Image 1 (tube, helix red, strand yellow):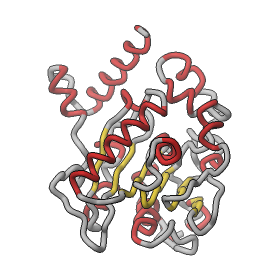
Image 2 (cartoon, one colour; image 1 turned 120 degrees about the vertical axis):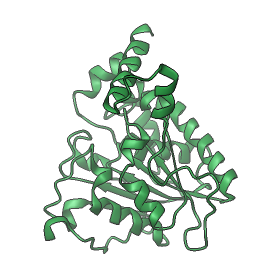
Image 3 (cartoon, rainbow, N blue to C red; image 1 turned 30 degrees about the vertical axis):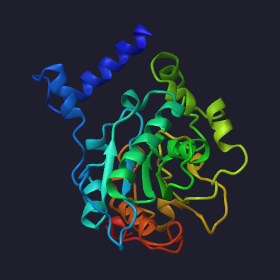
Image 4 (cartoon, one colour; image 1 turned 60 degrees about the horizontal axis):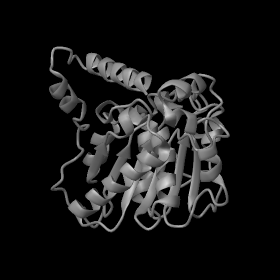
Length: 275
């Protein structure tokens, strides 16, 4: 337990230093770390008829919302959506069920503030998989309209680095190992339970979720679209960590949110470099 607290402190210190906050006191640094990305957390925002669901952004492991969503959050706001983001699970290291409960509570806060019956969820890595636990086990099925996962760890990773991290300070890393008890429970039976429409966006160059195809889901095509970026944009070289900053990913997200059902599998985004 002491080791876990120590490592979490070191992660927080590293994140603080990366933001140039080393001169701040601990409470001040903590408050700055909770600053949302541009365009997010206007709690007076009310959805309009063209964008009826507010969008909840869910970070990946070890991520802060301000960095994770620095590009996509302003794009969603500019497109007309009410956007909300939050940090959870001690830098997303807590067990998945505990963090999914935090997501449930945050969704309720967003629904209460906006008056919306449902939300759309866009998540990165762990944040693309974790909402499926909320949907399947914590009552989220009738509260989520679209679930868009960007390089999600839906079937875990065979990346060997996940194992030592899990042994030390990161229970969610254990949960995200291929074949984990958590993922066996999550993926048993229907991988895309009725309620939301599901869009999965992944890249052949994923260096974290290995193999990249473990992100993909099985389910009814009416409610599920699996996207491999390079199938439409062969020269897109974005990898796992920065996938939320890929302009092509943003186009897929906006397509998924704007239409009834998941992203259109026939959609052709504007590719980087003209590819």
